[in-house]
Length: 358
Image (cartoon, rainbow, N blue to C red; front, side, top):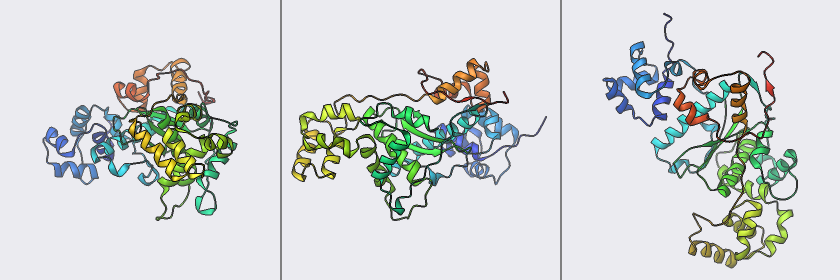
């Protein structure tokens, strides 16, 4: 039998994903926490029997622990409110994200999708978040007016949008590249639609303005990314009349059309000088009085991601893979495959083709 070549970093990753502490796993393995820590650092050899035991306890196939870890540096993963998320929840989110990134590369081994052009706009060289937002609308060829299908536009650029199932209310979104260079925007699927749209814009700003650039340590890149969605989804030159006539009663209509929250619209009107400080405070107080600071009324339309669903449909229909075979390919178990990747809606964005070698 060939020897197992175990990557001990994957033990820590699996443990984080399952929400298991080091002491809990050590106790289940009947070893000291100190020895488990050494195993995870690669300072202590791990036997095949122990790997099998860990795989059973954490419910991963042994093959999961015999692959390289994701190389995406943590510094290239941006997401809001990170400091306020407890460490255990943060570890689980990062663990899931790294597994998903790894799986996406495996899924795309046999299928081509549009290659993302790697846009770069350095805000230290004269660009502003607002000017980049307008330029990205031009690049994507978005017609004037509201953006009804933002996810479709992003996926047509070669950006994968992943709706992540997180009960962590403080997690909105995250952006990262797979090891093979595919950009992925993760969005908490439990956000209201207006927040999903805002987060898409926020993460797009990270993707084109921050990840490819050297950022001076004194810059507030989160504040920069927060300025992008207001111009991307509600271009100033197209909404001047709306902002000039802004009143509290018409916020619901404007929210439904532009797809931004009432709070974001009020903020934009103040920032552009169309309402004064007194009116701004009145509208924010009124939102608070009506209980809409956390849960606004009003409907916002949003489309759904489709690239990964289309990829899986090709694997099912063209290559005749089963769930079990795909899970084996991804080096995860079937229940994790269903949790992370099982298609739940119809695809609308076409991937390019099966690779010629197939």
